[in-house]
Length: 474
Image (cartoon, rainbow, N blue to C red; front, top):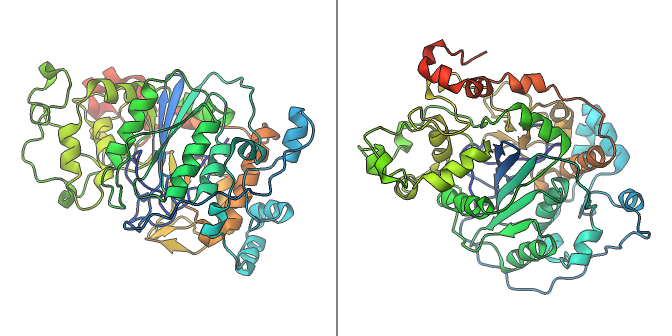
């Protein structure tokens, strides 16, 4: 099973905030920018038998007037006849794809034929607009008629998704459907600046599914990352109180191979982005709720991607053991890249030794990051669409063949206003692979079990005692 991930260039995304205009599309396996469009920033927390996926949506238009409250117009959605699950699945495709979606045959050929995909991309002229979202019916009957929502579950591995959203409701519903399992947990934080109608749509969605939760506290989140961490933690606290979560086959295989390890990119932070405070000791930060643990150990700052996969043990450690008030205040004063440092720092600090964590010893050699796939303008990786936004490739129909063979969990990014054909084609592919073609490819779990972070975590005490003996690259 494949998903999509956040779209900002890097940094651990948070909960409340807005939706990036960058669309993160589900890819076979998994950056941060100054935001634009709809991006999904995802952070997964792989707990022993559970995972939290954190995603964030943010919009670069920071000052927007709220759209007036409008009556939702019923969409042309007819429930298929018959009560059987098989009959329902055959008549229901991915949810809420608009009339701008690509045709089935064109989609199938585009994934295997890049030249054909390029020609199709050149011919398309229309794009979905805001009116598409404003006319979507969000009563429970209409919601369930637009997509297949199985009540059965045979998985024993749990996942919770944490997302910050702000706009493009039909994309939110589409992603929810593609990641849906009756025992998964979905937590949304709505940016306080989002329109009234978007607020209503998302809250209606939560009222129709018992496994959807929307945070009560909302923050103003911007493209520089301000209040991302606060928003994310709101959701972590909420889902911390919930029972176990479960999810889909291929994602489960990959996450189990991580064996409790977090998947978080780490790198040396830019010096100008580190808050100018001389004392980063645990004592000065009042880092632990148990004040007896706040000694003179110094927290080593790191930066990383906004997307990550975190173990449940790590999430519980952050929520239950740490007091992040001071460090959040410090980071939030940084002009840009605010949300790039908290999670990577907590994960890599050797003294903190967080559950599922890694080591700062490998900060200059950490390349084995599988949560999100991104192609930068300076990268040698292919960007077949040749479209970039903030120096990040905006994947199009021509890129689907590359994404099909990717080992990442998420891709950054796709934008509906750039190539809705690509989004709709990928959605159809995921839907069919999820519900029909379970065995159309195998997962090389050995690749994931041999990642440096997994090897380190499997014998963490051994390597902590002798960091120089650990091979960061292999």
